[in-house]
Figure 1: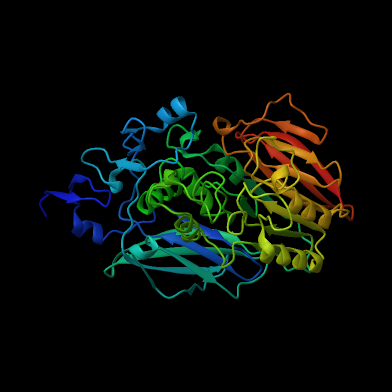
Figure 2: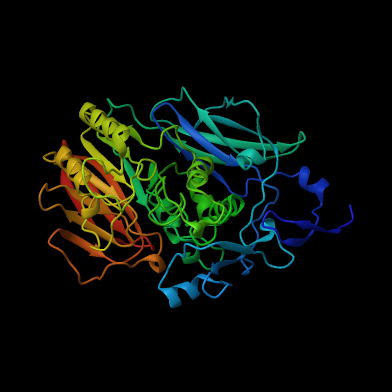
Length: 499
């Protein structure tokens, strides 16, 4: 097929010149360039996420990005975001948006782009060191799901390592494969050592692997061989770039295809939680209205999140890992009231449905260690000017309900994301400990002064890194250990508790 150029009108109203692809080759060669993700692990089930792609490699980052402009009514001109920050002290202008694509480019040729392709996918899986594969049916993928599919594997063996192979094809040709593995959780009757990691806030512009792109923490976490990872949210940041649904999908392509991320998620399961930036924009809630995000809506962002990661039906979940560990994963966006609403019984982050679920499941749990994992702080302390979480006065009523409900259980701990610094704090009233994991890179750390140590703080560090949580049996005594690591895998602080 000869390469020709066509003039098309994009959905943004711009005329764009694009070269055609070699369609015959593309249709015969599907890939898994955005990797696979394994999630929602239980003792007998798992969800495998995969996406079929046109190309073997992502578009290299060369500064080919759209320009985002906002309309200034006072001067009747389009301006960039920096203009509003300097002239009006407005960081996220609530103004009409225009997206200008680089000349000769479409979304498929921007930095980090990984276009999808229609086809079929299936999974082969088996316990390690066995010879018989089980298979799922072939499933179609197309543009409606951004070429993704989530396979639910059920009736798995407990506390068992599984090998998986994901297969993809188009037009019954060109089948490609990608291998992976995971371990199912132990049954709740079995006391077994558990080891997992917690991370938050992955800003694409603040990657710290310069050669090929990505984040150092993925390599360091993988070396420690955790059973699983919990991502507390802000998997990526939509605010400044995702002004349409197509641009938001491209944003996910960029992050999902980073080499460090692909290699990690092939063999380490992850429970994904969403927060504000990977849903829509800063401090958002379902009733948020802001022209800053252009055509992209909160509802689209929440739906897209569940499409781009392995996910259960509900956004709040709990998982048991043997006799000693149970984790609760909370949603802080779907049920949230506006920050501006006066605090009181009717103001909520969790919502009644989620609160009732938590109280019922928490009371019913006989796990040795109960770990509440929240996208945002519950204990704090946090910056006084912030108004978006339970440790702030803005949501104090519901925060007091949660803190009072778990008060007195020395084996209950809170882990949170969102904050761009690491800390260990002990709540002054309830005595409950909270561990903030810190952001994914040093470049993204900040927001707190290193010498601003409050009475609650037992550890404070303005760095990137991750949190490790590990349980042991030591001379018939059950212990849980929380360790903060740097981006280079250096242990910075460790806190150990006995049951």
